[in-house]
Length: 122
Image 1 (cartoon, rainbow, N blue to C red):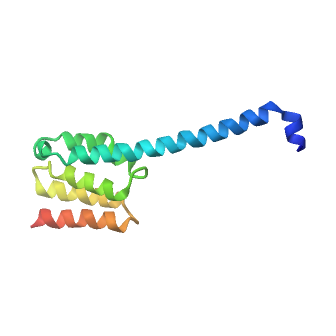
Image 2: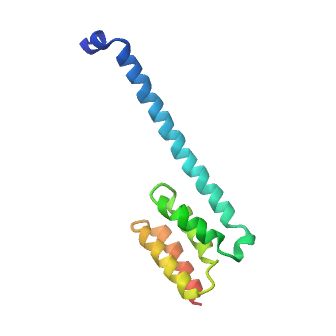
Image 3: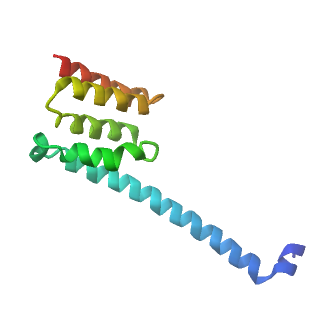
């Protein structure tokens, strides 16, 4: 038996349990971010949000700050959905450009924002 086990005894075992529990909690949190992203994407796809500013408010208060925790493609789709609430097309294009900057290095997600910008310009 290793010396640490003999000296620390139950504390070492308890420490191992804490580490395993922490890993489980982290997995759970990761899964919750995935579920939250799916819910927000489904929510933002609803036609009721074609008017108003509810999606923009939700985006500014929650979504834009979690870009590193969520799937980049889903993030860009939520961003595009939120951009449809802008009444001024130039403002919507700037909004998409800002989001595209947050997605640096995520080529597919960046393309989605670029395509949405092009659609707004047409």
